[in-house]
Length: 326
Image 1 (cartoon, helix red, strand yellow):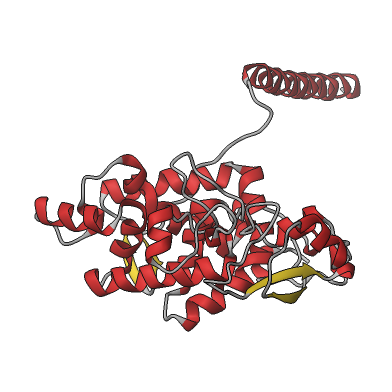
Image 2 (cartoon, one colour):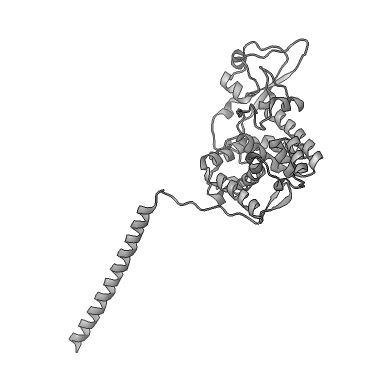
């Protein structure tokens, strides 16, 4: 009897081991097949679309099909343009501390800093094919209307503080007309004339209900998507550390009342380089600066503090703790 019992136990063990090897080999085969079928080395998941988002303190419902899909397009664009989105967050650490106080001083909602993000990618030298320039992408005529100097030697569209002040003037003018910040944002792209005429011609009172050219139709959704990514980059897979961010670089201000015949010499006299002079004063567009006696002006030129030109982890201040993991 014992022999039969041993044979039975051995037979059962053999069957169990056979089933185990069959199942594991089959799973391995399926995994190998799946790997052969996979044509890229990573998976991509669609970013979730919420029921609503907040823009300038107002809830924007996304439950209507077109609102959902338009936001879906932009949030996924930002989520998967990895290098570009990371660069935007790094640059924001340098420029938001300049932009935000000016918006606040002019009673412009803080969300409009993301308009600068999508307009210029926070590139102080940004110049579009249509000749819009600077962080806020002013066209020459619009810039002059809002008090910016634009000529061959000086172009204040590239002056961060002055261009931000001018943008605030425009935004307040538009709000006086529409009383709605989403319409204001759309008008920054299309112009007040176009938004006003389309609201009238299409018998609409909501900018999201307008049939507009694709760029304008996407515009406010891009601002809202940028805001969402910046609020919580880690949620969308962006892992940044403190020392990844671009630091604020202090400058000393030099008042200029007279001609500067050669900016390279001026830079050298102020212990900096021509390159650095232009980096911190991109509004200087020529190799010289002429101040006419008939139209005397005072310009403020910024000279970078030498110590701040070199990276040090101890010097980097994180403007928004949500951007980093440390």
